[in-house]
Image 1: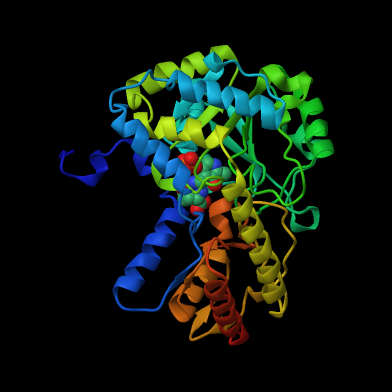
Image 2: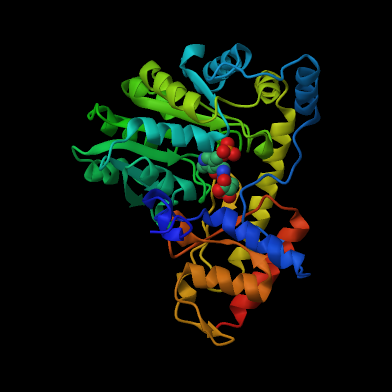
Length: 402
Ligand code: PMP
Ligand code: GLU
């Protein structure tokens, strides 16, 4: 086979799906560049800027000479700050040596997949799931086992349903709470019941993605790793992108049992060496300083959530629940399947997203990317004006379906 042929690519990349969230936001950018008035509600990115005091900490760190390679798992300053944060906010005891800082939580999860999975190991992914979980698990050789929670239970999977999906090949359970794409928050009792199930299977590692921790409207965030029965089986993933509006800084981390932390350090040492030095200093500062900007962002998201729900509920056929965190709404649109407009029939969530983008110039993401083809994801990390106009357009497009 000629090396210039696309068939010469490795199987691991040819069978990989492109990230639907990133693809959709690129399509929106392209349409905008052609001069169309596009509103993009496709990407999960706070529309706020990073708080000034965090930027100032990065500038100071640069001026102080934090411009070199750091230890692979992170500078002592940030590992200590994260250890303190875990204790303070999550009732989790991770020694700084159990913390690994990476280039975004995305890399943290990739490290875990590559270090923990062997060919054929099963990973139960609670669905609807964040788009990248599926491909990251497959890249590690794992077999994704998707367990879908329905809208009637706020898209959450119960402990009983989880128990039914576990077998001797199950190696990992992976989920986010608050959840991307649904905004659902697993509450104390639900997590405790799940912990009780997993504690019976010591070969299972829980990967608990808590990156939306600070965007929780339902009270105190609960970390599953704080239940003693699963403490030694849990890896807690978190990052700075959402709570501190730091998506472009590429800074995420885990707290993990020592043997897992060591393995992640080993793989990261061969892949990226670690996160940016001055970014780490700013991250340490962010965790240990005033959280008022984060609380203000959460209040703004809550206000938008209520507005978005009210507007969407007014559209006939749109089924909406009331998520308790993150900045997503995940409406069920199956009522429109089989209906047509402009010569196009809507048969699934991808058709719906395409129709809304092309006709209404609003970018959303098809639920199929998250393992739930009856739904679509709308990110309300946008201004109230944009949200109002976008939902008006969605309503207009839907009104033409017949
Ligand atoms: N987990 C979830 C649930 C997310 O929504 C995101 C956002 N892309 C990530 C992980 C990755 O975040 P980052 O790499 O920006 O830290
Ligand atoms: N987590 C965000 C999202 O779901 C960012 C995009 C991505 O990394 O996939 O839209």
